[in-house]
Length: 302
Length: 197
Image (cartoon, rainbow over all chains, first blue to last red):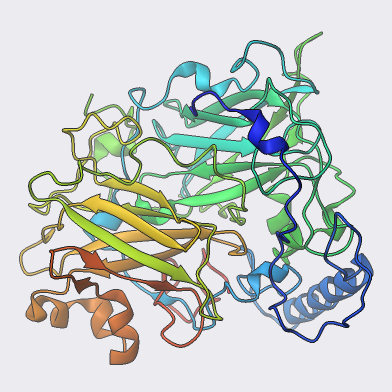
């Protein structure tokens, strides 16, 4: 967990730096274009939405022509402007995982304190916002629980503000909320975090670009090949259709796998709303020993 | 057993700063200690500019080629080699790890360090490897390296510096683009179960 955070440094003058850096300097921009003070990107949502619609239509047509469903985001998804210079243009090279890749780094309760899964108790006071409990299971592609592994999360506060010098948009920081949590999964692959529902976040990909509320998740499996970082969304967010990061997954079924489910049975009266989200990692490549298949506790070496 | 469809990845974004880095995250053992080597390089984008908001993880065997299974990577007791490290790049796109030269995990195998790359603007993590430059024979026999043409093959092999350190850059795109790996499909990219496109 980070040491005490000095919020003063995050309340400095807004940076003039544009967080979305995709348009290379010197690209043919009209010289005298008026740009809003807090949003230097000039492209409209309509331009982006048209691009996303065209890509979505082409994918739907490909599906009808028998193309396989795409289950991961496209690395090359130009509507996310920052991806333009940051995606490989050559095909990923198929590799059979070697010994080290068939195992995962081991984490355990030595690494993570039980209280780190509660993001609402990290400071002297209560954070503002809607208290929520996010829980679920981490499974591998064969449906086996991923036991005793590290889950890390981070998120904006209820106002949609991150503690980061590059997030200077005029929403308040919350001195009682850092927005960072960790836990170790249980024997059944379960995890649970208590936190605050994050707000939507403006991110300058284009004019009036807002991210749907989301929580970043970082996950390890039992094999290094299963490592993944992703984002969990909340059901029914009106920003889904407008967001190039969510839309970079062109398949609706695949996108739906990132959206949590509201669970009223687990909602705690007068306390917190409950959301469920299960995460499935890729399949195992290793031949498991019987003990592993029965579920390791993840603490073998402690 | 029924196969489940994996959850899609998403970009790490720019704001992982309070979440992913931790004290001594890049020091798999103490810098300057016996057997320690530096692994250093720069992450570049397709225009050749350093990427200032990438974060890398490495995972490797110990010097004897054994796969570590010790917990404690996040708390670094200073003595236990866990084989895992994490380094966010700095403003100039440079990452640095202190680690050991991994040993071969099987007789005659070419030793390498497994690497995963995350960055703002990168939609999903990228896997790759960095091989030690010594032992030409083992490198020649390595199945992955053998499947690559020479121009691409060299993007996976570190340079040994005069002081014993390893230098290895990552190019996300363009000429000399680093070879990134797909562990899922056997066919062309896009056909794999885990990494369409």
